[in-house]
Image (tube, rainbow, N blue to C red; front, side, top):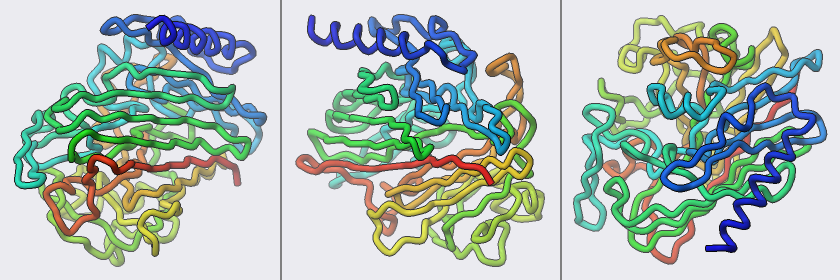
Length: 374
């Protein structure tokens, strides 16, 4: 116990020292708080190019991400709050959050594994969403700042936590490379057969967080197919071609170009909120999922993943009620998410890539957000 307290003290001290000469406007003390007897704080990752990422171990959330435009001007491009209280008191939009045990939706909060039925919390009627009422996004992760550009977060999720079987040991590593890559790696093991689908839920606006909508951003996805959904946003089980539909992003298209088309799938999602099937020969290989370009600033973001799918969501449920960083309201469609993942509701669709993790197996996943300018 004394050793773990010492490690946490060193990590917090490292994080505080790392704030010196920072371009961040967020005050670290605004995140310094005890939750369930565990210390929460803010940690900063930096690279030689001046990019900075602020992370809190409450939910493993990406709070801020400063990247330059084509003129070298730095701007925070992820949605979030200036203080921990913002995340604790606001409606849960999952800003910057680490999602588990299961990213996305599970139909009616139930699934069967080895003939045993498991029941989960219904927190997105009539389904379970993003791990339940108190998923990984609302837990305090153990944290070690390993270097100026690297952070390790660990979590133990107990057997039957939010209804999921098995004690799960999770290690998540955040690293900011000098190639302007934000690399997220996940590793997990379970004491019992379980299902697992981890992801990050950062909301991006390449104009800058709170600086207008993202309808002009040019999106390209390395995906010829997508998984259509029913009216509750649960996959039907089909894997449909995107060609000839508003879901064809195989070439760069403005996010807003076809979002008002008369299309049942767009009506169900109130816009885009769908899983796309990444084109890859090797299911487990690291591959390009997609890219986004914002012409005015010149900012360009690429997303790579070992996962088979990516959820494209364009802020259809943002209401502008809660004020974000610097008092800016996050309004309707002012951000997009590209959540690398296994498919939604996979435990109930045997034909989808498996999300089952058994004792003795090791879950590994990697996601890279790479930033540059054009």
